[in-house]
Image (cartoon, rainbow, N blue to C red; front, side, top):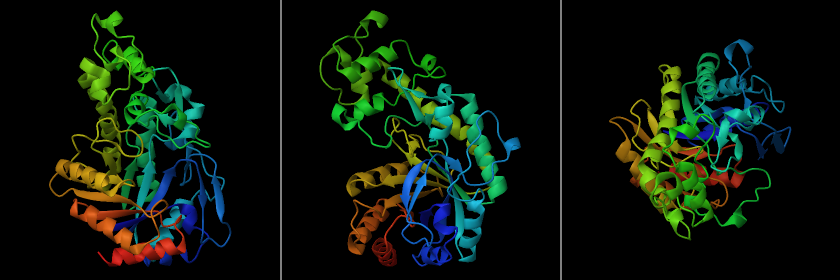
Length: 385
């Protein structure tokens, strides 16, 4: 099955949108039901070309009785019931409609509830990142899914950010590259030490993380009696095991448990609907593709990110395939936007690589943001498969 990703405003108000999307050769659409802020282009819409999605929003009517402490915002840039309007138009074109649901990535709620967000080892808050260690965050995510299932009546549900967010975030005017932090540094800065998380780690974890980030010669001997991490020597750690030493396995278990705990709350709320998880086999993963190092047989499909080097992405898909239960599908989340060229040959070759690595379905990003030339390339590439 091939799935095109779109926003409600790509469809609402554009009578040609549903047929254009169906002509790509897809069977289903991932339609954003809960999504974060963005600045987007709308190359085809009769009423606008650039849209400011000012904050995270819920694209079904917000019924106060459906929510607890955390209540999502309604959009001002499109209709409050835009999801249902778009769903109906897409179904009329013969497409299944899956509810693309972003869970813990929500700057609107995070900035208004700073006690509920991820905080790194230095105490810095990440307002975009709701921490699933908090009961109110778990409650919000569960209610969000139940409301989408009940009010939206989708054909399936896609869960994004089904775990903790972390350091990585493309904020407006991002100014973080100059620190020269490696991927390990960013994983360390993604560990949450909020009030609900701090006591879950073994003693000395916060000090070890700080020292490893700063490349400090200060060791954790003051708290544990003996050096345990890369922070005992100057230089950058080469892995999380290098950075955390004897603490590694315990900290890893804490991190993986956060994503697992969130799944325990939201998957039952999906009822009988097919569930797709945006997932990453890396236990330290944060963000849209949450850590899933042991798999989860309750999902119908596991989808891996394929926005980087195709060989690396193929390896990730292979790892997800190794985790998949019998009958569970593996999908590739394929980028059709820059820096990928608008070239059907290149795109078809990448799809073939992902297919040989175990991808049984292609999740195509993004049918609303792509230029006419890019949609043509995508259409042709799919036809070659």
